[in-house]
Image 1 (spheres, rainbow, N blue to C red):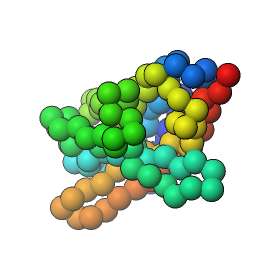
Image 2 (cartoon, rainbow, N blue to C red):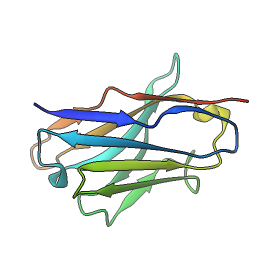
Image 3 (tube, rainbow, N blue to C red):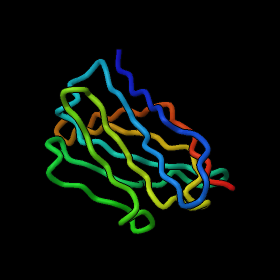
Image 4 (tube, rainbow, N blue to C red):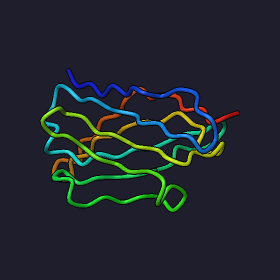
Length: 118
């Protein structure tokens, strides 16, 4: 059964750092591009960052460029999002997404809450 399990969320002060993780099972992780999305209360779910299957290409939303870094470890079936210089507006539930461009299959995790507040 397919699972994407996020972890590492929590409360952090403005200017702080946090790393969240997403571990996959039930499908061939290395064949899926991985993305992070986030959804703030009352807002739409927005794309944050993406990484190709071989990790050669990463892309970021303008709002997080230079502060967030996406990476993956295919041996561990895990994708990471390192978040630095966090701002209150980064507060959201963060979701990982796996996408296969050949089959158009995609899977979602259940989300992990990140709160940036003093």
